[in-house]
Image 1 (cartoon, rainbow, N blue to C red):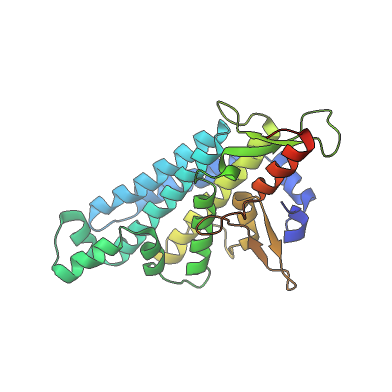
Image 2: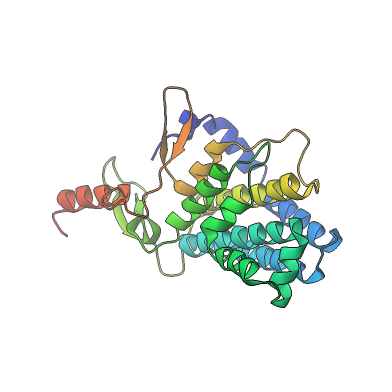
Length: 267
């Protein structure tokens, strides 16, 4: 874990933002997403279903966040982005959208549709925009995927009981029914806010439908709300910690669990 102050998000501004009720911002972003779905002219019309599906995944993610079900929330948010990105591709390529919707197309076009069944191909095909790169999409998707895979940092957390001394915390399972505590839930909500804002930004960048404040920009450091860790390089650039896919032994919770087992004398 790294201090938020190390990645250009000060703790003071974080808590001030929490006090202004992040839930209101999530409500606003959710409303904007729904307004887009209800007002945009899709062609073919059936492509709207992909964005409705994305909205429902984001809504499910929000509901799960309120219950402290972190792993399940991350999975819903990831699937919401995936559905939106496919929708953007098909909106921008009406012929491909028709082929996708009605099962049309020649062999070459069917091969293209087959590629779009793979998330990595979707992120590649959607392309670059002035403010969002393919790498930005890769990172937010991989971060969410990392936190929804069945690995230790997805199913357990580091807990310090009230009144405990420094170093007395331990790695424990996420409780039955999810994480509890208003401060914990507020932190979890930041993930929902980050993903919803990114989803709206991609709609604005790729489809020209204005959704966010004028002059917005994607702050890569916000990935810490998803990955829960990372580091800054000498240039001050934040790099999220993502341990999935071919990186066994790089889950920081494994090291914490090992130290906890040594301290408490039990495995």
